[in-house]
Image (tube, helix red, strand yellow):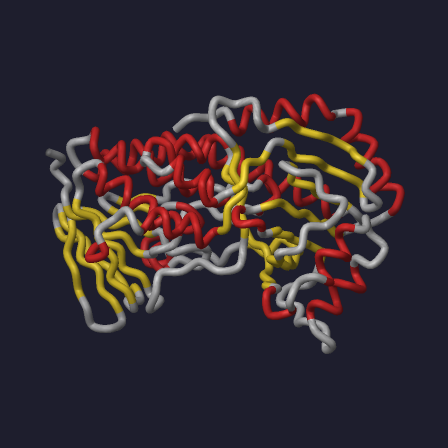
Length: 379
């Protein structure tokens, strides 16, 4: 039995819930402390690439994931008007690519962990390391002690701030919108993620399970730019009115209350993100732009790897050093690749955009090979 037994996890999102499941399966006693009063994920779809469905298979959740999700076969990049630039087949792996609502994935993870392992309504305050133990404090007055602590509390991680005294994440000049609708546009190609690239703007959509269509949009914007006075739906209808027909169709078919908006941030990947028996995971460790679709996927990888390292190593300090050394090269590559892809989306001058589109068409096989290499990874 591993020396470290009781593991404190701060944050009950996808990364925290996956870590709890991986640790519980490996014979540990994890407890998740989540600041919200209920476990929930809101309003967004994600693509679970083969590197992530590999993790779900190892956690015994792949068949359930396929049941509530939608099998994806291709990732197609197009110009604003709908002219195909690159078409990447993504169904050539031994594992499927699945489009799924975040809430569906979240439920699959936490429902396979005993409910008493989740303590809700607890906001992390700070920690103390005491020899081989760690004591975590919460704003409610609760104090708990464990053999190790894992911060899985997202982009603005309180655990990270307490551990590293870190700088704020970096705003990358993009505002995003996400929507969910039952409407399937006539231009949709079954099995496809279809993405359209314009001048400083982009739009994409994909099918999820239960006949739902998920779409996402992005545009360059100053930090914390407010919604237009006439509402975000009308703003999007104006922004994308002359795009490929499916784009304005999807916006028009979506209720305004179902449209979420966020600003995009990341961090320059650096080490360490662990100190002794405390480490970070997912966005708390390595937030990235969503341009490669790997945020949730790498959090699942993290969860599986950190559990394996704790199982293999004699103490959590050694385990977290191993975990970080295994994860950092891949994470650095994906964060930097996601940022480069985002920079391509910032191009606004018509000549630059035309050059980018031509480049993508010419480099189609290289782009396809890059995707395959990224998704072929097996943690």
